[in-house]
Length: 114
Image 1: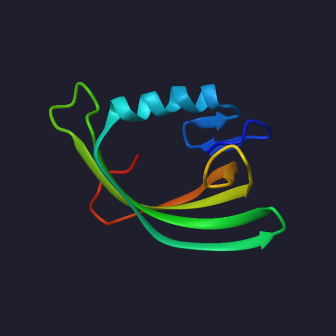
Image 2: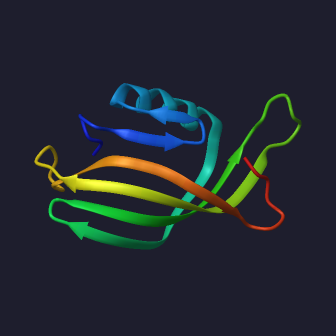
């Protein structure tokens, strides 16, 4: 679902420009976070021809174990994100992500912050 060309993904962990970079970051995430929930809160979009600019708000809850701490941590937040997608023939959904950026995290009171 990621664009082969022009990919730009800006995560708190760093900027990703290709599928290999995303793969490395994804491996870090799956070895760190557990007991996760992702819940789409809202999507607003502007469509112009074959591209769409979207603001996506995702509710995210996750735990992680920051070794050598004696206990895991838990976070609960809304991640406000910007997506740019475009029409593509590379998958059955006819869409690919070109840009992704975390705008901000809105933390629930009392939960750990990243």
